[in-house]
Length: 109
Image (cartoon, rainbow, N blue to C red; front, side, top):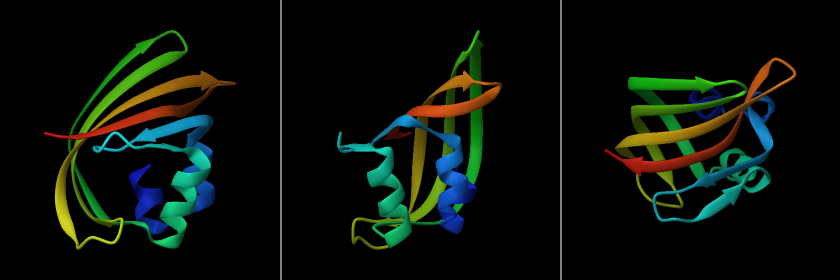
């Protein structure tokens, strides 16, 4: 997900996100898939790098939870560049043997 966000590779990013995907920003703002992809593509959300600190995955049948902590260098919503200590709480579902992200809740750690 981060690799595609950094590269602004919208087809790759779209492929890992389910149609029901919603990103919940640290502010509580909810951004559905189409709006998130548009914001990455047009530079509203800019990502330069992501250094992963930890990832914890729990799988239960065709559902999974991934809690990842990363240091992300980004400039978002017109602000300056900062390195954020981001925790992403991801929910995934397995559809036709492919994992898709349905929800990402961002917070700091």
